[in-house]
Length: 342
View: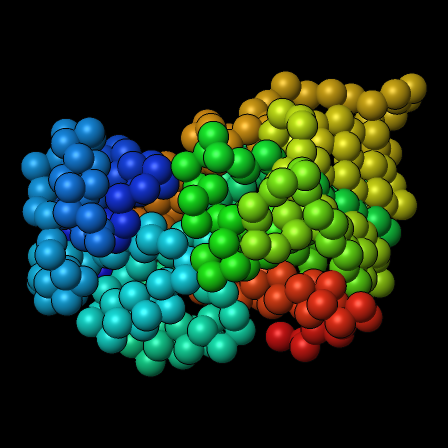
């Protein structure tokens, strides 16, 4: 595939916090140029461009974005309950896409999005950005280098108080756009489990209420036991109402070693009497340095130039979403849920 000679024109859909991070990431890549933005609030869209010094167009409707031939990439930063419609329409218009997580609120919408992307032959990347976090990347390399051996257990925890002080709370707390603790935010932990330990075949989840007087429209706190196709077992938790700084734990136990976040005990380091701790950027806050959008965008642009698929393209992200939906089914039905092999 021959790389496009001119920079890729980019349109941003949505004017919330994350849209600003997408704009900054595109601004840092010399192969992309932000052409404009569309949001239900034209004022918010205009302010977002001004905030980042972009001399771009504020579109009045999504159709205007999709009809603009100067745009090759659409960055979907809108609330997740409108993702399906926007992604399907953008695919039909031949636009490549960066899609914020979660993909959508139910299996049917996700499947329709995947089908639309397949029909159109466009490229996608879904923002499970922790795959580019330095600690997660180092963990992936340690696993590939056999530092842990055969994995028998893994756990991932997403603990982040998303309350009225947090902009995302406006939609994240609702059943329509938040959906569940995992869909709203904790899907990052599910994706980390898949990325590091492999596919999951069975889940059993429980949920719990949060603070007294909480106005979440679903239980914001959740934990699930999982069984991997490899035979390993694990646990994932997503806690949105809590009194703690942001926590994202990744613990992996194998027959040759153990990883606890940025601490390693392994056969690869003879004579160890305790864990080796290495300095790195941990995924321990919602700040951008811990959620590296720049690396995601750089990866996606490289994929467009070379014809490769992104590591979080839409079909891979669908697998993460299926685990989240399965856990929600288990919580609702009070039973273990088997997931279809993909």
